[in-house]
Length: 461
Ligand SMILES: C[S@@+](CC[C@H](N)C(=O)[O-])C[C@H]1O[C@@H](n2cnc3c(N)ncnc32)[C@H](O)[C@@H]1O
Image 1 (cartoon, rainbow, N blue to C red):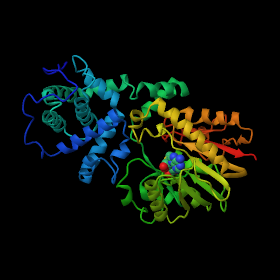
Image 2: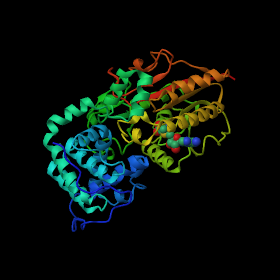
Image 3: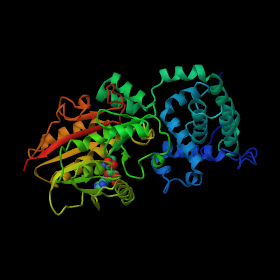
Image 4: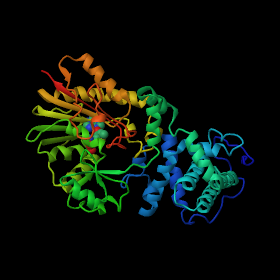
């Protein structure tokens, strides 16, 4: 079935209400959640605002903060599905239209995507998802005249989803074109497809434990990975309610994110700068090994989280709030870890907004910033000392190409190649060049991890 547009055309300005918007629906249970979800989806897609900022428990969007905690969870779940499967949903909606939605029909498109995400991917009764989308459209002057269209399309998607969804998933790549193209150029089409497919799945939760991985795997209901992280496929409770949280026995950290700090080797008793440290996953690892850690970050908010995390874990570090490009340490460090700000395309499984909020231009700018941060980091380490550079981008412009370019320009820095046997269980992530490169597409024992890059450099003089 093809659903036609209702009569009337979109104009750039909100149209005059031709008929009164639906009245008395303000209190309809669940409506505020759908409105908030559509508003936030608009902020991500149209204004490229990161979802984490919109759904932050303290500084998030006012509509989000006005919701009860259960409703916030539903908004998060709707948005995760709507963004993770954005291209699939778009396909299923457009197949049901006689002609494409006008380019300016953002509000209508977001209502349709929020409705379809619930019908296709969430445990919400189809009738409730359709009804709330129709009410939502009817009560908004920008979309009121299209409530019939919303009803027709969403009902049709619900009726045919058993057959239509599996087909659409096969026929669609859930990634914007620029992202697919860059991945294919870097990894080849087969690996790029595998990465994009992995992004459709909700990732497991990994934990780094202070000690006794076997015990904590049992208590948390997970298993020990070859790198000693614990993996839990589905959490039994929110993180702060899990056993061991209050006593600071572990912290949440993707298995791949735990690898860069290990590349510094045994740093017990050494002075180590953790640059771009907050919220402190790697600071905690370094402090746990007995290093004297200085954690530097420019964000006061994020450093507060780092401080809270270290306090809960009973670990210590000197904490410095500073811009690394301007900061100067009093003494040179034995070792430096720079976990630089990046496009975060390695974390799309957890942050499906990333590919919709970032652009290739952002990647170029971030690569430039990372190069400047790395050059600065190299001045903080003593001659002979080690600098590990890492980030959670999948893009070689922020990883392999950046470090290779720096090494070509500098004769006072050398690559300290990572050996294949250095990281237990992670041999398959070490490239012939001696970099660490992880992607979510692996099929080894230690797989299903975030995308990460790391290189180890030595300052020669
Ligand atoms: C990828 S996050 C770091 C994650 C952290 N290393 C961990 O393992 O938990 C990047 C961090 O870099 C910080 N940052 C970005 N630019 C900076 C700069 N010029 N100086 C200091 N910190 C910076 C951001 O505030 C952010 O906390």
